Each structure stands twice: as C-alpha cells, then as structure tokens.
Length: 144
Image (cartoon, rainbow, N blue to C red; front, side, top):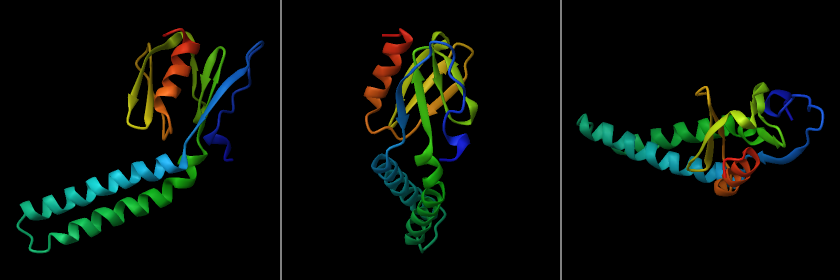
C-alpha cells in the first residue's frame, strides 16, 4: 500500500479503529462503465449538434477517454482506505476529522460525502454498500 493512500495518523490514547472503508473493485468498474456510457452519449451529442457527419466517433472517443482514465487511476483509487475510530475519521493524505466536527453525511451514488462544520467536504469513494457506510459513520459520530 502506498502510504499516502491509507491513514497514517497515530492513534490517540484510548482510540481504537472500529471499521475501515476501502474501495470496492466491482463498484469501481460499474461506476466507470456508467461514466463511459455518459461520455459516449455526450460525445455523440456534441458532434451531432456541430453537424459532424461522423457522430459515431464521439462514442469511440468517450469510451476511449474513460477506459484510459479508469485504467490509469484504478490502482490508486482501489488502494484508498478510510478508518473510523471511536474518536475520529482518518483518511488518505493525512485527512483527520474529529467525529464531533461532522455536520452532514450524504450519499452520492457509490460515494459517501462527509461534510464538516467548517464546510470541508471529503469523499469515501466506491463503496459497495454506501448506506452501510453512512449508517456506521452516523452511529459512531452520534448523528443517528
């Protein structure tokens, strides 16, 4: 695991990891498949609106762009992990959120968005069961 993709913070006194949230490979592939479909339709629509007689190339371009992007980012996205402790939410890149500072928890497709009282927004991406992730966060932070 690359260190910046997993929590690196030392645990505080009496702090224990309750649950970890890692990206799910099947969810990553499914999300990128939907993104590719949208890019293909969007590319074709733009070419059609511009009067290009080769509208089909928009589908090829959209698919190609998302496949390259998805393949390039896959190893990093799937290596990311968030740890929920009894005191904080610890994330990749040194992100640390005290549980009492969590204001909102939202679902965005397969992502769970954590919004802090200061307005910072963090995404826990590609969750196979985003509802379960939200429930665990709400229960631990006292938002339930």
